[in-house]
Image 1 (cartoon, rainbow, N blue to C red):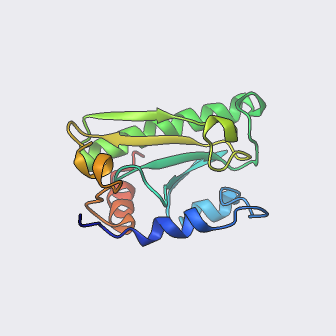
Image 2: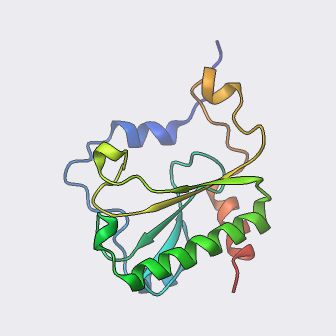
Length: 160
């Protein structure tokens, strides 16, 4: 059987995550300069491309504040997060034309959160037939474009 090589994923899988600095803890000023994979910056939250996407265009909406439980976020943070979630869906629709979405969060390590101490919401664009034999049989997801190309398309399509 032939295999597709996804070297970026192994770096994450094999890394010792104990003692890691939180990759989601950035300042609003850093987010507003749109460094790296950040697509949009809100007042209390921001949107970033997932470095290890489930699908092309996979976005993550994070509060700036380091908080790991949904009941600990303020109403103002929740409002900014949900506004950014809506903008993310609009931008993805404009840039990538998905036919559906998975939107949600995993809370706590037992709930599946890879970074359990910093709450984050996933926005995964989906297309009819996007789950084919590759992820099921080959345990590999075929990504049709680079993260840089995806970011450029989303920044151009971002509302406002």
